Image (cartoon, rainbow, N blue to C red; front, side):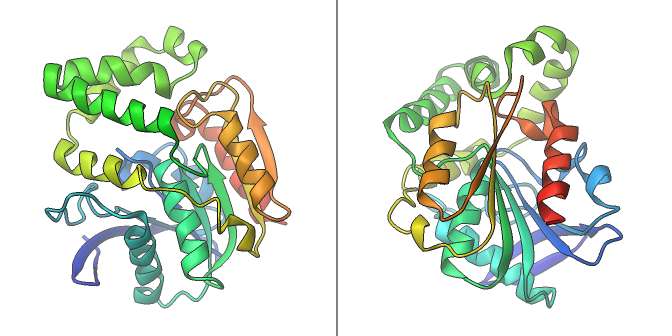
Length: 262
């Protein structure tokens, strides 16, 4: 299993694909590298595809701490590029990964050739705080069953919920495998996210993707990203909720490839 020692932490990563251009995929909050299973084969013919687990995710370290800072996660992503001898990469960040990707582009200018932000936030507002707190409270009171029941309406579109009962049960089993204490640290880190003051400083091509039924990171947040980032483009995927890598994997991959080929 490939690990990189970065800033005193053991970070798990995977590499595959047949293209020359490095493409770094950054996970959503409860994801691991395995979460890209549907998107991965669509991207591998085009890119040198990199995936990593942040602190608190998958097979990476989960240090005891009050929270995991997004800036630290961004520095670890840059450290992985250093470890692999990659000067610049095309970066795609989904949800939590999109916030970390913003910090990566801000803290390490020149290391990101282009940036695709999918279903993510310019800042964690009071609604996002309360959603995170509701998930934490649900787990404390009812464990996985209640936490999953509370979180599902925020994650998927109406169409997907109606048509995929069996898959939702499988996804519940996967949700039960996460280290919930580590996820709480990730949630607490998100509460500190506010990139509004420095997003206008970003000087690179940026494309923003959001599902038109995304309730967790809603359209107004993507519009704010477009307004704040110079020359950023916004694309809205129809009939899609928040979890683009599952319910809109093909459209997500097409958007990544189309933006990367410009």
